[in-house]
Image (cartoon, rainbow, N blue to C red; front, side, top):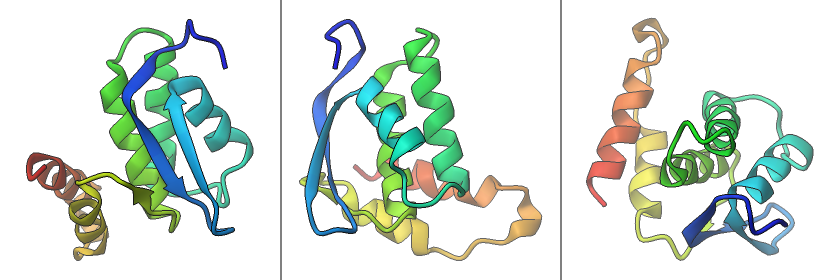
Length: 118
C-alpha cells in the first residue's frame, strides 16, 4: 500500500466468507480487492464500487463516497461490514423490494435512505 493513495479516516472492516475479517484503509486496497479477490464478478453495487474507487484515484470524487459504495458492494456479496454503525440500515436497504422496471432508481433511493439514516 502506498501512502500517496487516498485513505479513509474510518477503515472498512469486512467479514469475509471464509470467516476472517479484513480491514481496508485505503482506496487502492479496496479496488485491488474488488478487481482481484472478489467472490462474484457481478452486481450493480460491485460495479459502482469499482467505478467510484477509480474516480477517487483519478481525484474526481471524494474518498468517503467510494467508501460507502465499497461497503454496499460487500453487503451485496454477502460480506457484512464490521463495526460500522450503519450496517443494519444498509442490510435493510438491500432487502427492500426492488422493481427492475424502475431502471435502478429504487436501488439508488434505498441506498440514499440508508445513508441518510446514519
